[in-house]
Image: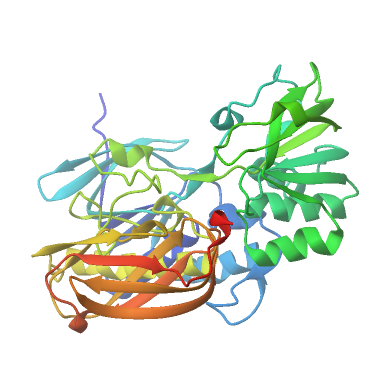
Length: 428
């Protein structure tokens, strides 16, 4: 029996999308030996099928398409000493003494990678129809927004003629416009929540500009059809998320596109005991973006779903820089302090900081409802650390607060929304 080959690296990065590329470049700057493991046949991840523009406005200060944005990073990676393994999958990962052993397979070989540290940049996946208990006979014509995007943009095929979008996630909104460009009739977008889950700019540019109706607090309760979708029944949604079936109506269509949310891909991390955030679905991390397993870092959509890729790249760079510090024994990991989210917040990342006075602390969070003329408040005990006025806070948009750590003490950090006297949208 042949001995399994083992490749040695300082850092192994799982995923070659926007997060993996940006983190790898930061690690490589520190003269460490790094490998990117990517299951697709090219670098760039999901960006390769996002042919619309709107990327890079924050990071590059210019407007790019998804493939153009990915190429800016992949070109740098390919010119560097970073090893890239394409069409390669990680089957398992385990910790052995001070290293991590990854079981890896590609078309030619099964082998091991031994690394001092690992960065998870595995991205996210779409919620399937089963996530909303969609009632149907499983006819053809039900497809996720990401799959529709791949079929149309990469393979040049159409998915239907009369199309309904379920959910108002950004990919669904963008595909509503894209499918309209290809001549499809977009009947409408149905969103179960009382507010859209996509960015405001996509609501305007993809729906309003093309007069595509958006139906809030309304969703699909049944798909009709045997061989192919023939139509759907939609019904209003009450405040307790029950359906008002007395008002359900039939909408004729041949295709249902699901844009019902994204979930971080974290299954591989579960095998080594990485603790997960019950709200985001990603890993629980400290201020260095290190998971509950020392030496393992997480960033990008595998940590929490971002709305702008520029923020993914910036976060991944922090993960890469901190990972390099870990390998070089430069991270200060003593005196952990909890970060708690309070009123008005769904979650906050990271979950912990360390009681030292060095550097800046980036707090990323999403609010639980629409708030107007509100304030974001950060406190430690009775001490107010920061207060930011916000004209509007939307669940679809990730917010960031940056704090200088010299202003902090050893007490738990609390971040919450403080409302004005005007009620937020959910209370009206």
